Structures are given as structure tokens and as C-alpha cells.
Length: 340
Ligand code: NAP
Ligand code: GDD
Image (cartoon, helix red, strand yellow):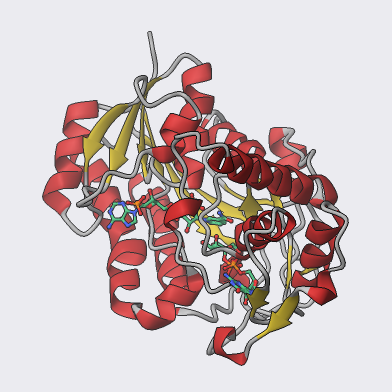
């Protein structure tokens, strides 16, 4: 029988890649999207799956809408990817972040418990949970020391996922994913901000790249690979929590240097750091230990840092070239307010 899957946050980076992956597995894919005054389906169009996903409106702050999408889709698996996911914004909107990213997860779990506790549930947990608690590489037993309203909300969601597993026997998993990026990454996040600015500068459309903390380090992987780990977690005999990472970390400065190398320019001539872009509290360094996901699920990151940056810069170059040729296509960068 065809498996039915429900993805919340289907309009986001991971939601779009996961929908594509699950359609490839022959699943009936239901995508829960948030109603906006201007529709936001550019990633689904980009991946050529807009017509294949069954789109249902939902808001994570509205239990009735969650009840409705679960009742309508009757899923075998739910992937809860929807969130206010931008760490910086969580300092400006701590309550909205708690409502959506934290309580939103409780609302879905409660709908699952009441409607069909046999549904398998994936929660998009995060390396941000570790905060500054550990200088080395973090695994499934490393303590969590959240350092942002976003991380605090995700920590609550992480625990609720475990609690529903232990208390009610729900097949609920936390994927503790480290940063993963792609050409479909939102423009606010540092990798895409850099690749987009570098492409514009290389084509004479921009002059400068202004960033915050250049010393922060992250374990950056490639999003299309990471969504496969989500699916693998729900195909096991028993539910569990898994760190998903490359095992390597690089600084923002290395990211910028590598991105400018891709277009044969010297990063120092175009980049500056502004104190206005520093966070009230920073997570200095994150690196994951993917041993468990490798041993139990056979998952391993293939695309590493240098290749990832190249993929992203080339994709942004291609988009801006198409734009210069006057082509019309579904894309986000043209609507992004630029400080350059
Ligand atoms: P993203 O691109 O920001 O996507 C977030 C999705 O959530 C979007 O579809 C967004 O809808 C939706 N959403 C936001 N508020 C909502 C609400 N109130 N009701 C319903 N939907 C709502 O994030 P991502 O990078 O794909 O990440 C997916 C998930 O993984 C997130 O939970 C994120 O926190 C987590 N995560 C991400 C990473 C990473 O490196 N990417 C790492 C660890 C964990 P709109 O399109 O309408 O805004
Ligand atoms: N966004 C951004 N913009 N970040 C900058 C900038 C800038 O101009 N300059 C420096 N940075 C630094 C941030 O301070 C942070 O240390 C690092 O670059 C990465 O920032 P983001 O790309 O915004 O990602 P994040 O690590 O805060 O959060 C992402 O990864 C988490 C997993 O660790 C998001 O996808 C979260 O949703 C996810 O949970």
C-alpha cells in the first residue's frame, strides 16, 4: 500500500527536499504550508514537484488546523519541519518563536496522540541545543546548554518528543541535525547570504559583503543528503535520537574565503564585519559526531565544505545570469532587501 506522509514546513529548504525525496520513494506526500498574503512555493517549483505535493494549509499556532491536516491526510509518518528557524530573529521575537517552534511541536504531538498514536513522528531538533556547552564534537549524550530563545524553544520540543515516546509509546524521533545548506537555503542564513553576495559581486551587481561574527564555527553539510537521514530514522524497528553532521567544522571567515575563491576574487577586498550584525549571545563553535547515525542507519555525509560552497556559489551565479538575460523564473533573491 502507498505510504502517506505529512510534512509541516513544506515550503522551507528541508521541506522541499524531503518532499522530493519521499515522492521518489513512491509516497503520497501531503505538504502543510502556512497561509501567507503572497504565496511562497518557489522551492517546490524549483524542484519541479509543485504539482505532485498535496498542499494543505496549517499554522503551528492553531491546533484546529493541525487536527484538520492530520485528519485529512491520515499519515503513516509525520515530519515536523515547520519552525521559526532563524536564530537571530528569535532574539527579536522570543514569544512567537516559543509559540511556533516550541509549543507548535506539543500541539502536533497531542493531535497524534488523540487521533492516531500509531503515526511515526520526526522532530527537527538541532545542534543549537548544545550552545556553548562543549568545545569538542557533540553526540547524543552531550549536555544541552541552549543560548538563544530559538534553542530554548527547540529544547522544549526535543523533550516533548521524548516524553511522548516514553509515556505513550509513540514512535517519535529527534534528528539532532547540524547546519545543512543548499541553493534553496533562505537568504538570511550566512552560507546563502555569502554565496548570493559573492555571485552579485562577481557579476558587477554588488560591491560589498557585510557580516557579523567571522570567527563563529559551524559543521556545515548538504541539505539534500540530510533529509534522507530523517526518513531513515522512521524506517527503523525502534524510535531513537540521532546526531546528523559531517564531523568537520569551519569558520565563517573560511566560508567567505572559499566562496570568493570560487570566483577568483580576494575576500578581504570585499568583506567587512559590522558590530550591528553581532548576536546578543553567540554560539561560538559547533561540531557533530555522526558515529551513531553512521553505525545504526548507514548514513554518512558525502558533500563536504569546499564542494558545498562551490555548489552554492555556482547556483547563485547561474540565477543572477538568468536574471540578467531577462529570464523569468521562481526564485527568492530578487525580493531580498540588500544592504550592498
Ligand atoms: P526554513 O527554510 O526556515 O523552513 C521553515 C518552515 O516552517 C517554512 O516552511 C515556514 O513557512 C514554516 N513555518 C514557520 N512558521 C510556521 C507556522 N507558524 N505554521 C506553519 N508553518 C510555519 O527551515 P529549514 O532550514 O528548512 O529547517 C527545517 C527545520 O529543521 C526547522 O524546524 C529548523 O529549525 C530545523 N533545523 C534546521 C537546520 C538547518 O541547518 N537547516 C538544522 C537543524 C534544525 P514559510 O515558508 O511560510 O515561512
Ligand atoms: N545569518 C547570519 N548573517 N549569520 C552570520 C552573519 C550574518 O551576516 N555573520 C556571521 N554570522 C554567524 C552567526 O553569528 C552564526 O554564528 C553563524 O554565522 C551561522 O549563522 P546562521 O547561518 O544564521 O545559522 P545558525 O547556526 O544560527 O542556525 C542555523 O543552524 C541551526 C543548526 O545549528 C539555522 O538553520 C537553525 O534553524 C538551525 O537549528
